Image 1 (cartoon, one colour):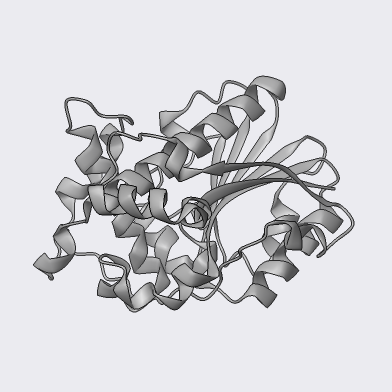
Image 2: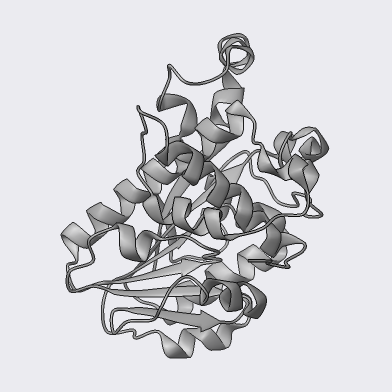
Length: 265
């Protein structure tokens, strides 16, 4: 099956491929059979994009583990809650995780949702919304009578800070019992995006990074940090040796890649 995407939407294939590769490992830290099934059905033109670096493999799987933990904890605390996946791509969490009585919304731009519908079907508990996360009209389709967790994976760094700030503030204004979990990178990582072994293959440069997460709390009085999760604390035996050495010699590098969990209300 041919799939034509470009720019930021095309980067969904990075995560998809990494999860499929991971699922086939005998020591897989994350099992995602859906990623394997989907990848086997897609025909790619550029063979250079079929490979991923060891650092990206480990980092993306760590990211997946952390977000899964946050989602599962949220659903344990709020069994009837709502999860909104911003920039969902071909993420299969709505099928991989146990939702029970929760409601799930997958949101992405129209071209990405069009591809998604080739592999996923809507159900009463899992809905898709074909809109940019910066088109705030999607918020009208999400109930506001229950606790809501917003997640975003591998997305925020591709957009300008002003757009991210406006989005977070809008959510804080409209949803009175909400949380947000997303991955971010340092400003140094943004400046060096052309050296990223996998991102450089796509026409989607990094645009936003943040060194001090406390800055986000200044965006809106209803935004507060719950916890930060650092990639370097996970799967320590799988990071490539050069990265391990850099982490030891330059400790701030350990905090360059992380998940930020916020309270928005």
